Image (cartoon, rainbow, N blue to C red; front, side):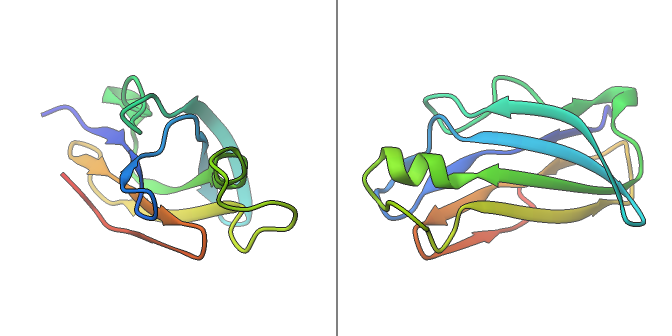
Length: 117
């Protein structure tokens, strides 16, 4: 089995996929963050491919940053200073041969995530 990391974003306030959200992926080692990927969600709120897969996915700590503020402003769900703008989700990958799916369920005033499939 080849390991991979995927994500998607759903707008729970509007009840639809969140298209056009920029997502940055960082490898975290101690206090050091190294950017290793950046992508944008498509019309289905998903990325066009895995963020990492195969040998590129290694055991360790990662952080996804979802740039939700631009999306929320573009969809008329806020302006000026937003309650949620950049949403970081830090997680661990203990087994690099597995599939890690880290979705974001988003609204202007809250979010949730989980390990999906």
